[in-house]
Image 1 (cartoon, rainbow, N blue to C red):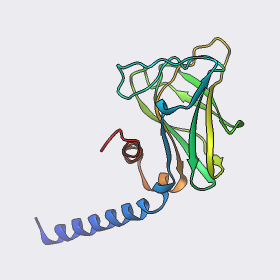
Image 2: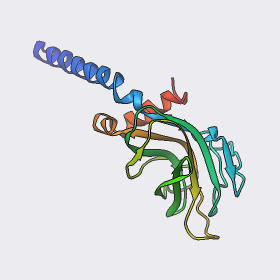
Image 3: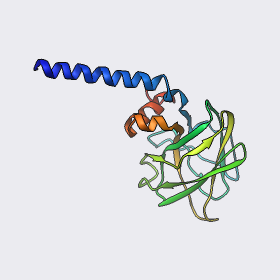
Length: 182
């Protein structure tokens, strides 16, 4: 290998390492991620737990009004981008997000092809207050219309994370945080 090539590769490695270190000391600490299975409450329906999926997940979260709740801690008030690793065969599946009982936003989960093909979904940013909160997702949309989504995990990302990490790195970071990867 040519000396100039080796020098260039060393410089790139140092820059990438410095960027990763800076990110690890900053915005990554502000990622709020939680496993779908770690919900603390549900109502207006009952989920089931299939074992034939790529991720631990639940199913039968399908009809209007069925809600699930998670307890989360937001480290710092600010604007966050919600993301989810999920599978659905529905063209559109609607959910309402509320924090501590206050409506925050409506999310649309778009088809991943089927209930076994998981993809990363991004949603419009939301303003979140600092502290411990109850996050609730409620099936929205038309009454009686199947709105099934099988989520693996959810996360709220600070803007800086989206500026620094591509989709694959976001998935790796969140899944490492949640224990899906080592």
